[in-house]
Picture 1 (tube, helix red, strand yellow):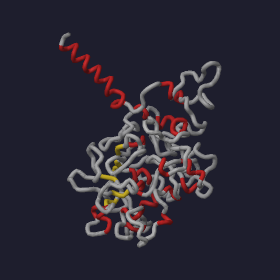
Picture 2 (picture 1 turned 120 degrees about the horizontal axis):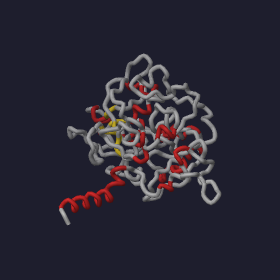
Picture 3 (picture 1 turned 30 degrees about the horizontal axis):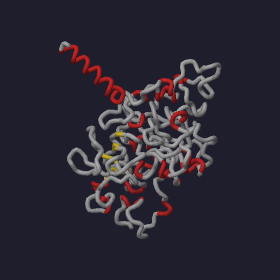
Picture 4 (picture 1 turned 90 degrees about the vertical axis):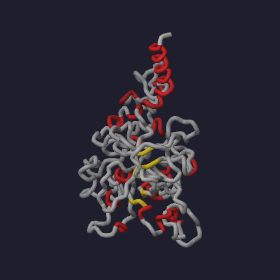
Amino acid sequence: MTKKLVATTVIFLMALVIGPSSAWSVGGQCADCHTMHDSQGGAAVAVGGPHDRLISATYSSTNPCLGCHGGDDYQSGDATPYVLGTNLLESDDLAGGNFAYHATGDAYVHNVLGSSVDDDATLAAVPPGYDSLNYPDPDAFVRYTGGTTTRLQCAGTYGCHGNATNSDPYDAISGAHHGNASGTLTTADTVGNSYRFLYGVMGIEDSDWENTADDADHNQYHGIHRTDDVSPDSATISYLCCQCHGDFHEAGASGGSPWTRHPTDFDLSEATGTEYASYNADNSYSIIAPVASDVTTDGEVEAVVLDESGEYDAIVTCLSCHRAHGSAYPDLLRWDYSAIDAGGGDGNVGCFICHTTKD
């Protein structure tokens, strides 16, 4: 066998081994997701089909995403994270939470079209904290361009995932599932290589979506330390949230103290000599109140979050306190805020993971 043939054979075998995991996130049987003609044995394949992009597993006519991401709770080894599970158990929730908490009340979820029958009874289609004058800022994708009367969707202009310049959810997310779903800390210039298909957001996704998680096994979020209301980095997860909830990211209409509202994209480790400088008591990563890092090079997730200078980061984000889809607690919080009792001796829990001297 010639050297050229050997080399070619080795490259081919390597492609078989690493190709699917390095080139795309979704592999396997095409029929698991798509149907060619929506017809088999004289019967339709897809519920309510045919559907755009030849999607076969559709939860409802208004939300195709939940065909694959809804209905069953996650089991170890599953290839698809669920966002609309069957169990309302906090221990079963993945990192993003569960839309099914809508059964508890509107305040427990992002009320996404197709995940529930009705719009939010209190807020209708207006995001709390929506600031039509200041957010989205000129450098961000313009969401809610049609006003605040359109129901929240999973993807597109009126959703969180995909390309916000496209109002069609199918078009906004199209092709991304065959991209790098894990995300990176260096690029987010396509929907596919952005964290969780949140176009423009950097981060590294845990391999099982935090079905199992500890201080060295978790999502790694991207954040920055900012000193005023203007965020210079559109790749942070909090920057995405502020496109709908912008008023929660300001110091108030007249400016002033950054503590007028709870800060995001704020590095606790910069607060030298204060209670915040001892995040989680020993500066180790907490899966209860996760923080971000301003690391901009790909690397392994650290138990103690380190930046490029070797110092630790503990950057507060929206997701430090909230889950994206829904949670067991009001306002999509990660814990029961009404049970947080300063000086009550509860220990290192909830708010006290950052406010380390308050208990």
